[in-house]
Length: 125
Figure (cartoon, rainbow, N blue to C red):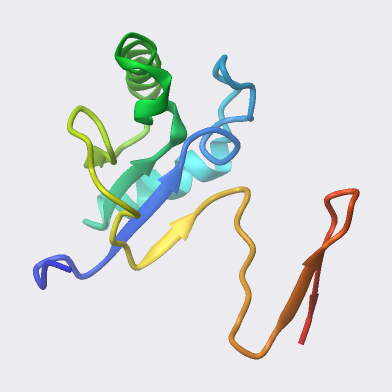
């Protein structure tokens, strides 16, 4: 990680910054947007990390998804420094201090976890 960056956060778009309505874009999650605005004002670096721009969509769909998302981010005044994997193809996971994602599960090294057939997550530890 660049030593000049003291704090870097990767933030998922669908389900985190906005309600998950993929392939459409859902309503804004204002609490997250306000938090990102404050972080940006405090000179924190923000990376949008989303599957909308993955190469498996094909270039036309990928470009359309990216343009719609960028327009939505501007309309709702969501600050960010860059979008991971767009327009260039980045490899792997973005390097960050923290990852904010509605589908994440924090599991410490001593914890055991499982997912039921119904999709419920259980963490023991």
